[in-house]
Length: 377
Image 1: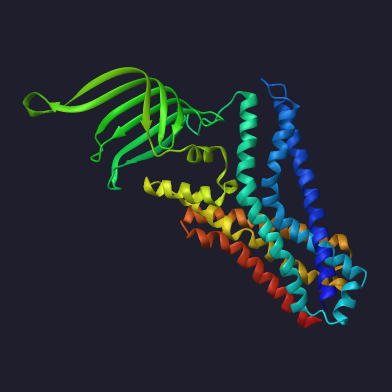
Image 2: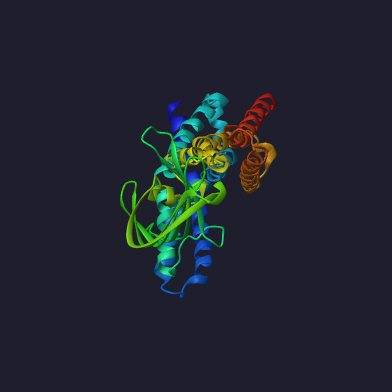
Protein backbone atom coordinates (compact mmCIF):
# COMPACT_ATOMS: atom_id res chain seq x y z
CA UNK A 1 0.00 0.00 0.00
CA UNK A 2 2.85 2.35 0.74
CA UNK A 3 4.22 1.63 -2.73
CA UNK A 4 0.92 2.70 -4.28
CA UNK A 5 0.78 5.84 -2.16
CA UNK A 6 4.37 6.76 -3.07
CA UNK A 7 3.64 6.16 -6.75
CA UNK A 8 0.52 8.32 -6.56
CA UNK A 9 2.44 11.06 -4.74
CA UNK A 10 5.25 10.98 -7.32
CA UNK A 11 2.84 11.30 -10.24
CA UNK A 12 0.99 14.19 -8.62
CA UNK A 13 4.19 16.01 -7.67
CA UNK A 14 5.58 15.77 -11.18
CA UNK A 15 2.32 16.99 -12.73
CA UNK A 16 1.98 19.93 -10.31
CA UNK A 17 5.58 21.06 -10.94
CA UNK A 18 5.06 20.72 -14.70
CA UNK A 19 1.89 22.84 -14.62
CA UNK A 20 3.56 25.41 -12.35
CA UNK A 21 6.53 25.68 -14.73
CA UNK A 22 4.14 26.22 -17.63
CA UNK A 23 2.28 28.97 -15.79
CA UNK A 24 5.53 30.66 -14.77
CA UNK A 25 6.81 30.63 -18.35
CA UNK A 26 3.53 32.16 -19.54
CA UNK A 27 3.48 34.88 -16.87
CA UNK A 28 7.18 35.64 -17.36
CA UNK A 29 6.57 36.05 -21.09
CA UNK A 30 3.70 38.50 -20.52
CA UNK A 31 5.74 40.40 -17.90
CA UNK A 32 8.63 40.71 -20.34
CA UNK A 33 6.35 41.93 -23.14
CA UNK A 34 4.94 44.50 -20.72
CA UNK A 35 8.46 45.71 -19.81
CA UNK A 36 9.56 46.11 -23.43
CA UNK A 37 7.62 49.37 -23.57
CA UNK A 38 10.08 50.91 -21.09
CA UNK A 39 13.26 49.52 -22.64
CA UNK A 40 15.32 52.42 -23.94
CA UNK A 41 13.90 54.97 -21.51
CA UNK A 42 16.63 56.59 -19.39
CA UNK A 43 19.03 53.77 -18.52
CA UNK A 44 16.48 50.95 -18.66
CA UNK A 45 17.84 48.17 -20.85
CA UNK A 46 17.05 44.56 -21.67
CA UNK A 47 19.16 43.37 -18.74
CA UNK A 48 16.99 45.37 -16.35
CA UNK A 49 13.82 43.94 -17.93
CA UNK A 50 15.17 40.40 -17.55
CA UNK A 51 16.13 41.08 -13.93
CA UNK A 52 12.70 42.54 -13.18
CA UNK A 53 10.94 39.51 -14.69
CA UNK A 54 13.13 37.01 -12.83
CA UNK A 55 12.66 38.80 -9.51
CA UNK A 56 8.89 38.76 -10.05
CA UNK A 57 8.80 34.95 -10.32
CA UNK A 58 8.64 34.19 -6.54
CA UNK A 59 5.51 36.32 -6.30
CA UNK A 60 3.94 34.43 -9.19
CA UNK A 61 4.86 31.08 -7.60
CA UNK A 62 3.11 32.12 -4.40
CA UNK A 63 -0.03 33.29 -6.20
CA UNK A 64 -0.26 30.41 -8.68
CA UNK A 65 0.55 27.46 -6.43
CA UNK A 66 -3.09 26.61 -5.45
CA UNK A 67 -4.25 26.73 -9.09
CA UNK A 68 -1.21 24.74 -10.27
CA UNK A 69 -1.85 22.18 -7.50
CA UNK A 70 -5.49 21.80 -8.61
CA UNK A 71 -4.79 21.46 -12.33
CA UNK A 72 -1.70 19.30 -11.84
CA UNK A 73 -3.51 16.90 -9.50
CA UNK A 74 -6.49 16.65 -11.84
CA UNK A 75 -4.15 15.96 -14.77
CA UNK A 76 -2.22 13.25 -12.90
CA UNK A 77 -5.35 11.53 -11.61
CA UNK A 78 -7.08 11.78 -15.00
CA UNK A 79 -4.08 10.17 -16.67
CA UNK A 80 -4.07 7.34 -14.13
CA UNK A 81 -7.81 6.87 -14.57
CA UNK A 82 -7.64 6.89 -18.39
CA UNK A 83 -5.00 4.12 -18.29
CA UNK A 84 -7.05 2.16 -15.71
CA UNK A 85 -4.18 2.49 -13.24
CA UNK A 86 -6.35 4.14 -10.64
CA UNK A 87 -8.90 1.35 -10.99
CA UNK A 88 -6.13 -1.18 -10.34
CA UNK A 89 -5.03 0.83 -7.30
CA UNK A 90 -8.56 0.75 -5.93
CA UNK A 91 -8.77 -2.98 -6.53
CA UNK A 92 -5.48 -3.36 -4.62
CA UNK A 93 -7.04 -1.65 -1.60
CA UNK A 94 -6.41 2.07 -2.18
CA UNK A 95 -9.63 3.40 -0.72
CA UNK A 96 -10.87 6.97 -0.73
CA UNK A 97 -9.42 7.76 2.69
CA UNK A 98 -5.99 6.39 1.82
CA UNK A 99 -5.96 8.24 -1.51
CA UNK A 100 -6.99 11.42 0.29
CA UNK A 101 -4.23 10.93 2.85
CA UNK A 102 -1.65 10.40 0.08
CA UNK A 103 -2.77 13.65 -1.54
CA UNK A 104 -2.71 15.45 1.82
CA UNK A 105 0.90 14.43 2.41
CA UNK A 106 1.93 15.89 -0.94
CA UNK A 107 -0.24 18.94 -0.32
CA UNK A 108 1.40 19.61 3.05
CA UNK A 109 4.82 19.73 1.39
CA UNK A 110 3.58 22.13 -1.28
CA UNK A 111 1.80 24.23 1.37
CA UNK A 112 4.99 24.52 3.43
CA UNK A 113 6.92 25.44 0.30
CA UNK A 114 4.33 28.10 -0.54
CA UNK A 115 4.52 29.49 2.99
CA UNK A 116 8.32 29.68 2.92
CA UNK A 117 8.38 31.29 -0.53
CA UNK A 118 5.79 33.86 0.53
CA UNK A 119 7.59 34.63 3.78
CA UNK A 120 11.24 34.53 2.73
CA UNK A 121 11.44 35.20 -1.01
CA UNK A 122 8.42 37.10 -2.31
CA UNK A 123 8.81 40.38 -0.41
CA UNK A 124 12.62 40.78 -0.82
CA UNK A 125 12.42 39.79 -4.50
CA UNK A 126 9.55 42.19 -5.16
CA UNK A 127 11.38 45.01 -3.39
CA UNK A 128 14.55 44.33 -5.38
CA UNK A 129 12.53 44.21 -8.61
CA UNK A 130 11.04 47.64 -7.89
CA UNK A 131 14.45 49.01 -6.93
CA UNK A 132 16.03 47.73 -10.15
CA UNK A 133 13.24 49.23 -12.21
CA UNK A 134 13.14 52.60 -10.44
CA UNK A 135 16.93 52.96 -10.33
CA UNK A 136 17.23 52.32 -14.06
CA UNK A 137 14.34 54.64 -14.91
CA UNK A 138 15.42 57.27 -12.41
CA UNK A 139 12.08 57.00 -10.68
CA UNK A 140 10.85 56.83 -7.11
CA UNK A 141 7.79 56.08 -5.02
CA UNK A 142 5.69 59.21 -4.80
CA UNK A 143 2.41 57.95 -3.32
CA UNK A 144 -1.20 58.37 -4.42
CA UNK A 145 -1.31 62.16 -3.85
CA UNK A 146 0.35 64.90 -5.85
CA UNK A 147 2.08 66.01 -2.67
CA UNK A 148 3.65 62.57 -2.14
CA UNK A 149 3.44 60.16 0.76
CA UNK A 150 1.69 61.05 4.00
CA UNK A 151 2.57 59.09 7.14
CA UNK A 152 1.49 59.57 10.72
CA UNK A 153 4.31 59.18 13.25
CA UNK A 154 4.13 59.21 17.04
CA UNK A 155 7.20 60.21 19.02
CA UNK A 156 7.01 58.21 22.22
CA UNK A 157 7.90 59.61 25.62
CA UNK A 158 10.03 57.81 28.17
CA UNK A 159 6.89 56.52 29.92
CA UNK A 160 5.70 54.80 26.74
CA UNK A 161 2.78 57.14 26.20
CA UNK A 162 2.17 59.38 23.23
CA UNK A 163 4.37 62.45 23.51
CA UNK A 164 4.15 64.24 20.17
CA UNK A 165 2.11 63.59 17.04
CA UNK A 166 3.68 64.11 13.63
CA UNK A 167 2.34 64.14 10.12
CA UNK A 168 5.20 63.43 7.76
CA UNK A 169 5.03 64.29 4.07
CA UNK A 170 7.65 62.73 1.78
CA UNK A 171 7.66 63.96 -1.81
CA UNK A 172 9.73 61.01 -3.07
CA UNK A 173 11.04 57.76 -1.60
CA UNK A 174 14.18 56.71 -3.47
CA UNK A 175 14.95 53.03 -4.17
CA UNK A 176 17.67 53.06 -1.49
CA UNK A 177 15.05 54.35 1.00
CA UNK A 178 16.49 57.86 1.16
CA UNK A 179 13.94 60.64 1.45
CA UNK A 180 13.49 63.62 -0.83
CA UNK A 181 11.35 66.64 -0.13
CA UNK A 182 10.56 66.01 3.55
CA UNK A 183 8.03 68.06 5.49
CA UNK A 184 7.19 67.33 9.13
CA UNK A 185 4.27 68.92 10.99
CA UNK A 186 4.67 68.29 14.72
CA UNK A 187 1.94 68.70 17.35
CA UNK A 188 2.01 68.44 21.13
CA UNK A 189 -0.27 66.19 23.19
CA UNK A 190 -3.04 68.83 22.97
CA UNK A 191 -2.68 68.86 19.17
CA UNK A 192 -1.20 72.36 19.07
CA UNK A 193 1.24 72.95 16.23
CA UNK A 194 4.75 73.27 17.68
CA UNK A 195 7.17 72.82 14.79
CA UNK A 196 7.41 72.56 11.03
CA UNK A 197 10.44 71.05 9.34
CA UNK A 198 11.21 71.25 5.65
CA UNK A 199 14.23 69.39 4.28
CA UNK A 200 15.53 68.72 0.81
CA UNK A 201 16.57 65.16 1.69
CA UNK A 202 17.04 62.70 4.53
CA UNK A 203 19.00 59.54 5.21
CA UNK A 204 19.10 57.06 8.08
CA UNK A 205 22.22 57.37 10.25
CA UNK A 206 21.24 55.03 13.10
CA UNK A 207 18.12 53.22 14.31
CA UNK A 208 15.57 55.87 15.17
CA UNK A 209 17.65 58.78 13.82
CA UNK A 210 17.61 60.45 10.40
CA UNK A 211 19.95 63.12 9.08
CA UNK A 212 18.00 65.83 7.26
CA UNK A 213 19.88 68.12 4.85
CA UNK A 214 19.15 71.71 3.80
CA UNK A 215 16.62 72.16 6.61
CA UNK A 216 14.20 74.99 7.26
CA UNK A 217 13.03 74.84 10.87
CA UNK A 218 9.95 76.79 11.98
CA UNK A 219 9.12 76.70 15.68
CA UNK A 220 5.74 77.87 16.93
CA UNK A 221 5.21 78.79 20.58
CA UNK A 222 2.25 80.41 22.36
CA UNK A 223 2.64 83.93 23.74
CA UNK A 224 0.36 86.33 25.52
CA UNK A 225 -1.54 88.51 23.08
CA UNK A 226 -3.34 91.81 23.41
CA UNK A 227 -6.51 91.67 25.54
CA UNK A 228 -5.60 88.12 26.55
CA UNK A 229 -6.22 86.88 23.01
CA UNK A 230 -4.29 83.76 22.00
CA UNK A 231 -1.21 84.44 19.91
CA UNK A 232 1.85 82.57 18.74
CA UNK A 233 5.47 83.44 18.11
CA UNK A 234 7.19 82.02 15.05
CA UNK A 235 10.95 81.43 14.89
CA UNK A 236 12.47 80.48 11.55
CA UNK A 237 15.94 78.93 11.33
CA UNK A 238 17.95 77.70 8.35
CA UNK A 239 20.23 74.70 8.97
CA UNK A 240 22.58 72.75 6.71
CA UNK A 241 21.85 69.51 8.58
CA UNK A 242 19.77 68.38 11.51
CA UNK A 243 19.29 65.05 13.27
CA UNK A 244 15.63 64.07 13.30
CA UNK A 245 14.48 61.40 15.76
CA UNK A 246 11.61 59.24 14.53
CA UNK A 247 10.18 55.75 14.91
CA UNK A 248 9.94 55.46 11.13
CA UNK A 249 12.39 52.88 9.83
CA UNK A 250 13.50 51.86 6.32
CA UNK A 251 11.60 48.60 6.86
CA UNK A 252 8.36 50.47 7.47
CA UNK A 253 8.94 52.80 4.53
CA UNK A 254 10.00 50.01 2.18
CA UNK A 255 6.60 48.36 2.46
CA UNK A 256 5.34 51.24 0.32
CA UNK A 257 7.23 49.66 -2.59
CA UNK A 258 5.52 46.28 -2.14
CA UNK A 259 1.82 45.43 -2.37
CA UNK A 260 0.41 44.12 0.95
CA UNK A 261 -0.31 40.73 -0.64
CA UNK A 262 3.41 40.27 -1.39
CA UNK A 263 4.79 41.50 1.92
CA UNK A 264 6.22 39.03 4.41
CA UNK A 265 4.17 38.10 7.45
CA UNK A 266 6.70 39.68 9.82
CA UNK A 267 6.62 43.00 7.96
CA UNK A 268 2.83 42.91 7.93
CA UNK A 269 2.70 42.36 11.70
CA UNK A 270 5.14 45.25 12.26
CA UNK A 271 3.28 47.58 9.93
CA UNK A 272 -0.13 46.71 11.42
CA UNK A 273 1.29 47.46 14.88
CA UNK A 274 2.62 50.80 13.63
CA UNK A 275 -0.78 51.71 12.13
CA UNK A 276 -2.59 50.75 15.32
CA UNK A 277 -0.26 52.84 17.46
CA UNK A 278 -1.05 55.81 15.24
CA UNK A 279 -4.80 55.06 15.20
CA UNK A 280 -4.93 54.42 11.45
CA UNK A 281 -6.99 51.94 9.46
CA UNK A 282 -5.40 48.49 9.37
CA UNK A 283 -8.08 46.59 7.43
CA UNK A 284 -6.22 45.94 4.19
CA UNK A 285 -3.00 44.94 5.94
CA UNK A 286 -4.76 42.73 8.49
CA UNK A 287 -6.51 40.85 5.69
CA UNK A 288 -3.14 40.41 3.94
CA UNK A 289 -1.62 39.21 7.23
CA UNK A 290 -4.31 36.57 7.77
CA UNK A 291 -4.11 35.54 4.14
CA UNK A 292 -0.41 34.80 4.69
CA UNK A 293 -1.43 32.24 7.31
CA UNK A 294 -4.41 30.70 5.51
CA UNK A 295 -3.53 30.92 1.80
CA UNK A 296 -0.93 28.08 1.83
CA UNK A 297 -3.60 25.68 3.13
CA UNK A 298 -5.58 26.45 -0.04
CA UNK A 299 -3.02 24.26 -1.82
CA UNK A 300 -4.18 21.24 0.19
CA UNK A 301 -7.84 22.14 -0.35
CA UNK A 302 -7.35 22.44 -4.12
CA UNK A 303 -5.66 19.04 -4.28
CA UNK A 304 -8.51 17.49 -2.30
CA UNK A 305 -10.95 19.13 -4.71
CA UNK A 306 -9.18 17.34 -7.58
CA UNK A 307 -9.50 13.82 -6.11
CA UNK A 308 -13.14 13.17 -7.20
CA UNK A 309 -12.07 13.48 -10.84
CA UNK A 310 -10.26 10.14 -10.52
CA UNK A 311 -13.58 8.38 -9.75
CA UNK A 312 -15.40 9.77 -12.78
CA UNK A 313 -13.41 8.20 -15.59
CA UNK A 314 -16.46 6.57 -17.16
CA UNK A 315 -18.50 9.78 -17.09
CA UNK A 316 -16.12 12.67 -17.48
CA UNK A 317 -14.67 11.72 -20.86
CA UNK A 318 -11.23 12.77 -22.04
CA UNK A 319 -8.37 14.04 -19.93
CA UNK A 320 -8.59 17.43 -21.63
CA UNK A 321 -12.16 17.95 -20.42
CA UNK A 322 -11.14 17.31 -16.82
CA UNK A 323 -8.17 19.66 -17.09
CA UNK A 324 -10.43 22.33 -18.56
CA UNK A 325 -12.81 21.82 -15.64
CA UNK A 326 -9.86 22.19 -13.27
CA UNK A 327 -8.86 25.45 -14.92
CA UNK A 328 -12.40 26.77 -14.49
CA UNK A 329 -12.43 25.74 -10.82
CA UNK A 330 -9.05 27.41 -10.27
CA UNK A 331 -10.19 30.64 -11.92
CA UNK A 332 -13.40 30.56 -9.86
CA UNK A 333 -11.41 30.11 -6.64
CA UNK A 334 -9.07 32.96 -7.59
CA UNK A 335 -11.96 35.35 -8.22
CA UNK A 336 -13.80 34.14 -5.11
CA UNK A 337 -10.69 34.82 -3.06
CA UNK A 338 -10.43 38.37 -4.38
CA UNK A 339 -14.18 38.94 -4.01
CA UNK A 340 -14.28 38.06 -0.33
CA UNK A 341 -11.14 40.11 0.33
CA UNK A 342 -12.93 43.20 -0.96
CA UNK A 343 -16.22 42.27 0.72
CA UNK A 344 -14.36 41.91 4.00
CA UNK A 345 -12.90 45.40 3.60
CA UNK A 346 -16.23 46.97 2.61
CA UNK A 347 -18.26 45.29 5.35
CA UNK A 348 -15.53 45.36 8.03
CA UNK A 349 -15.76 41.61 8.54
CA UNK A 350 -13.18 39.97 10.81
CA UNK A 351 -10.09 39.53 8.60
CA UNK A 352 -9.70 35.82 9.44
CA UNK A 353 -13.29 35.20 8.32
CA UNK A 354 -12.96 37.10 5.03
CA UNK A 355 -9.90 35.12 3.95
CA UNK A 356 -11.18 31.75 5.23
CA UNK A 357 -14.52 31.62 3.41
CA UNK A 358 -13.18 30.71 -0.10
CA UNK A 359 -11.03 27.85 1.23
CA UNK A 360 -13.84 26.65 3.51
CA UNK A 361 -16.31 26.63 0.59
CA UNK A 362 -13.83 24.76 -1.64
CA UNK A 363 -13.15 22.20 1.11
CA UNK A 364 -16.88 21.64 1.65
CA UNK A 365 -17.38 21.13 -2.09
CA UNK A 366 -14.47 18.66 -2.19
CA UNK A 367 -15.85 16.60 0.70
CA UNK A 368 -19.33 16.69 -0.81
CA UNK A 369 -18.06 15.47 -4.18
CA UNK A 370 -16.04 12.70 -2.53
CA UNK A 371 -19.11 11.56 -0.61
CA UNK A 372 -21.16 11.63 -3.81
CA UNK A 373 -18.69 9.63 -5.94
CA UNK A 374 -18.25 7.16 -3.07
CA UNK A 375 -21.99 6.60 -2.90
CA UNK A 376 -22.39 6.35 -6.68
CA UNK A 377 -19.48 3.94 -7.14
